[in-house]
Length: 213
Image 1 (cartoon, rainbow, N blue to C red):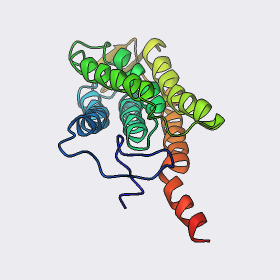
Image 2: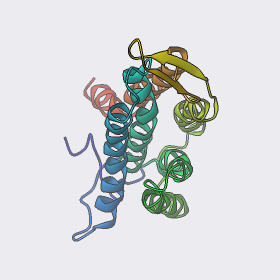
Image 3: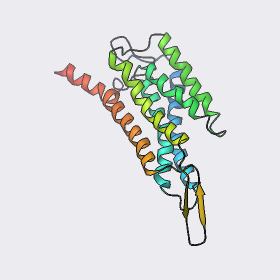
Image 4: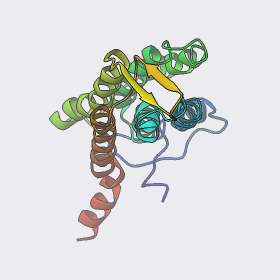
């Protein structure tokens, strides 16, 4: 399994994994930071749903649509680091810096995203980008741009609405996530996950099969 999931600093020019240097903590710190954003996204889903006004329409999918882009960008940053693709990690972590600026609670996490951005540039400068074909220039942009654009649409597009939770109580909000907006966000996230799995996660298995043929 180690060859299927190479260490980010332990990939040679042929794409083979080599043992990581003893005491190498930086790659583990990168992995931890990326995984943290996966958890942050899940946490935002819970917080947004629990904090929703009583009877808010589409609260469940709206919360999921809001948090999922954070999780998928963390997942893509992790894949980029672990598969010798600092360009993918750069495309995934850069928007996270901006997405952490939407709330003072998330601002400290911008430092972690910034750490991933810096490490991405270091990896590119050190020649750790092991995959240089034309798909490697296009796919990172596609899989990261889809959830980022969908998230931006949710954030800046406002839908004033009113609803009643009972006969006497009227609620109103100027920022509801509609079913269509939820579908757009979750569809973009699903696209990013599906492409990344086929493109990166299943790649080692295909390589092993071709060698065994």
